[in-house]
Image (cartoon, rainbow, N blue to C red; front, side):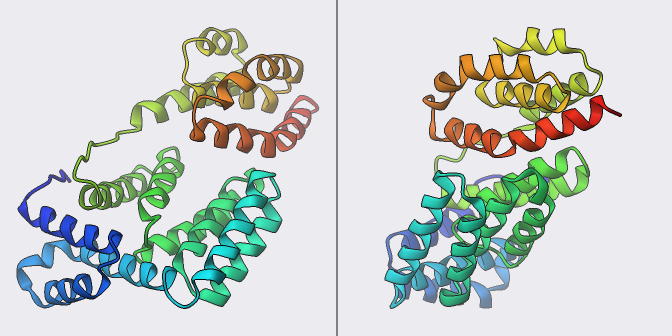
Length: 271
């Protein structure tokens, strides 16, 4: 399904900006009017998203703001130090006390970052998306799009469609971000690792993005080439880490899962 910006979506974008600017009362009136207007029936998903986003922001800046901030900062501090179980517990407590959907997303993302709890994370992220999420709906859809790209193309496209819808009304400078090229590179790395074509992985490495470089290192660990993986990681980690916030996140994710990858490699090599 092709999604384009038009006058209707520009209007939805204006309502989104009202919420961002904390003009909650006017935004609610506009959303309530849209729900009654049959002309906008094709934008049901976008309208439900805006309604959920508004509810989230009203709670975020409401009487529980201090509680929300405390749970968020504590959980994020734990993530920074790779203490994922503690982070999950803070986010879970935050959801229970504040009922803010943002915590549901953070719980799902935290589980998704760990190789052995990834499927549980997917379940939570799907739950978040299916309830029309909030401020992190775009990111949740991006994660699920990638996860399903290698398993179920229909589901991947389903989340890609939702991701584009949200991006379009939340950003007037929208540019379609098609990650299929990156996904195909990831698939290639996985196939080379599976077939133990290590020389070809090395050939790819220097000309690859940070994300693909880290995937290659991960594959080497999984295939019991620990010495080679350690050498590449030690040489490139610091340079990759300083490129961007996302690169630092990917490094932290590899750090968290490295032991699991190494153990998988030991298992494979021993049959």
